Length: 89
Image (cartoon, rainbow, N blue to C red; front, top):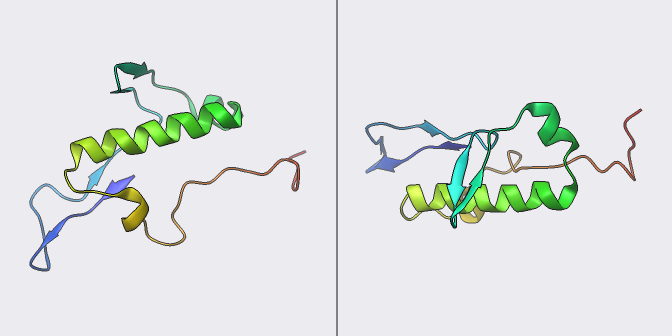
């Protein structure tokens, strides 16, 4: 996730900042370990969605005032493959 912050139309010092959902993070006293791309790609949908929601909440605690749902650029949202409608062979 890339967070960009501007003040009076100018990029704030230290921005943009990049956060990686595969890296280890702690939220709500739960430690989410770092995971490899294949692990993330093959984890059960529920586990992925839980990790994603917790990661978003984690970043929102670091970036005061950020509401990811309100500020996500259209087309860059997190997504998952629908293996039922479009199976990967």
